[in-house]
Image (cartoon, helix red, strand yellow):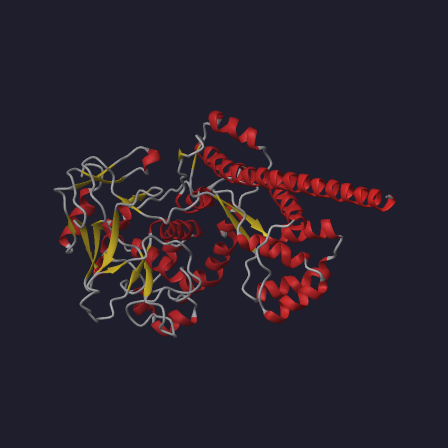
Length: 479
């Protein structure tokens, strides 16, 4: 355990935690392997418990004393039960308490610097132009949440947040650091319902956070959602967040019991191998946004990249392409757009690395291209058109994807060269994201071009056959 502060290990063990040091160790790995992580020091069998975390060591709005001291009614009134604001404030408050905080030794080992785009300068952010990363950062929204929710809470309770501590312990910069810690290291932790069934002694967790919550995490005390439906809370889980993740390398999983959480090996692990948790096999765009790294693995086609890469395409691009091909106006299409959204259709479509056009893409393009009578039928049945590829929507798709490719300031060939030449970490990560998305777009475009050519050849052959038939009929008529 030379690569981790012994104070943390002592704190963990003295508070009821268990780490099986006979089979695991915490070590520094190379950057591609996730940096500091947990490694097997002996062969581990499937089902072996690697470590156990008592529930009282979890840091959440339910375990921190701050909500109770603040007043639960006032906590809700000020919106601290929504989103991550409450947990961020709890973490800032616990950190400001220093050694008087129950989680002092845990908070002391957490990173205070990140390689995520949230902390990039404008020059580096420009490298992500064309990707969905910058738009999803939500920095402006986070700044607004800090000013409208956190600052009023701080000002309302100077007894809990002394004014002379605000500039350092409760600054906007500290707020962003805590938010990034939650984004990159928190878990959905299930509440124990107190009922043990014979076949459900252990409950599987949802693993690392995959999405920012739209409402507050439910707390184990009275800070919970009014509808009581959410059975999880977003929480920091000491020791569990030591594990790194890698595409389809998961060999352990966090399980929930009544009084503790257990990290258990889900397959045999050889001595020397890293213990991997899961992030959900995310594309490089999301890995970079949340965790500040990308996966570069050998792909079936001989390239290097992330098999989980995707490219996102806004439905607006499809609308533009339809208007271009049909000379239709936006007002003429607005009814169909509204219907699509009201029926639960997506306004952002995703193409996976397999390069296949998703059925939803075909259905949406056909919806916009339907004659008025067929559109009325679809509307009355509340059922979108079948996902068929025809010449009309094929042309719309080609235009849409071509326009999507033009949103990047560089070409595929330029990025392939840059991948070999770029030396700065941020730019290399940005190129990896762009490259993965462009390869998908290029692959799909090539497939669709080939299909259009084949359809064109077929149409030409049919036309020739029709012409020959007409000539034959005329000859027969002359006879």
